Amino acid sequence: MLRTHSATKVVRQALVRSQFASVPAATRGNATRALSNPQLNNIEKRWESMPLQEQAELWMALRDRMKGSWKELSVQEKKAAYWIAFGPHGPRALDPPGEGKNLFFHTTLILAGCLAIFVAIRAFGGQPPESMTKEWQEASNELLKEQKSDPITGFTSEGYKGKGMIQSPPKGA
Image (cartoon, rainbow, N blue to C red):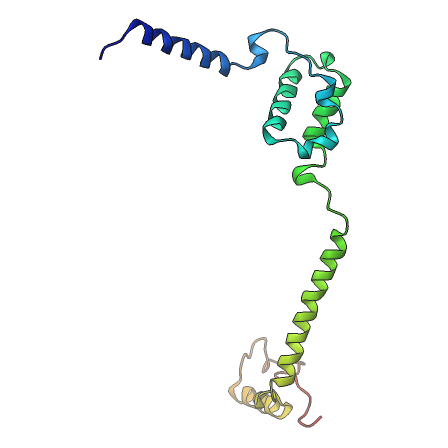
């Protein structure tokens, strides 16, 4: 591997530049530069339309300014920092106008569709099964009594006052 003096010099210069670029501005010099008023003016209205790179640069500059004494910050810088951190943008954005009506309309539409499907199934479903008649359920009660089903707490226990299996009206009612 042959190394020339000029190649080594270029590599050293590149390393020095990259190391200097990676050091935050706050540590390069003792004082950070105040942000200009036009940069912060009307930030609430401009923030959403700003490119992401510009948003990041502005936030990083404000963050660097806030690392120092807050007494040195201008009122506009303090307001901008607060608005960027806690303002109604991004996930905290306010709902667009009419969002509640739109949500109510779609929820009502879905519920009406579900009701229509339920009514259609009930209308075209035919007769309920034979085991849903009161006579069948009374016969089930008698069978359970004969088998002494659940004698401790259930149907055949002492003092049971429930209806057992009966849950339907009599046939033809």
